[in-house]
Image (tube, rainbow, N blue to C red; front, side):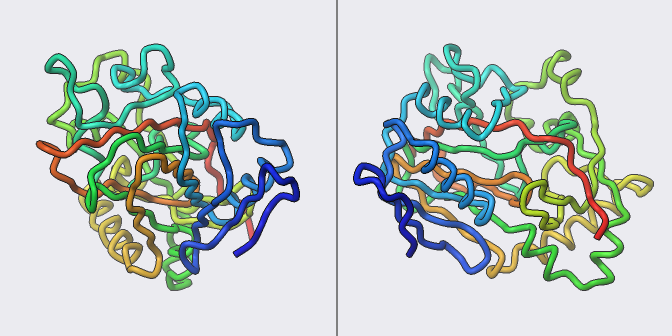
Length: 294
């Protein structure tokens, strides 16, 4: 376990979550002012570990937004009916209803994906804050796609490095979220299909990651959807081996920060008819994925 920071009021401790990725940070209060030197350490841990868990927080929407903005400009979700009216940077993820209407995105994304892969400049990272959650269910699972890429056979890596993938949110929404209201014409216009490399280079660490998911990825360029989906299924099956993953069991007050450039995640099931789950997500803008030469 490593300690960070020499000041009495901020003495962070970091411990690894898995051999491949993830770190848990104790000893920090994000509702207070975080010194630049401490935030720089958090940012380094984020780049190195891809996933950071900070438990025991008491965040208002404003404090979550202010802390999130230190990672970069924030992205508002296209499904703006599920964003907080006073704080549109926050996407509400919840099964709760008010006056017969869902207050947040519901039904969960129970297949592995990376947030906002379907836009031209996908998200750098997401910050997910737990206000209410059921006990023993409704976890979030993560996969290190850097570790997955590095474990693939060389010939498979070489093949994927030459491939581009079409990501299509409208197609995904129609197929996976029929239980939600249909997208409006304006929402569809904001999310046309985009193309990204199947393998991308992390712009800070330089590591390569497999950039594919069960959601949003429709097909390889110049390949049929049916054939592409079969290959995606094969890759996800390889990626879901236990050694590449971590599952987070939520406690109210947890803030989990993940790097969308190199991790996949999905929600695990829970009793949505009776249990309560209320989460606030902020999403940091990213840049266009690329694959550099080695």
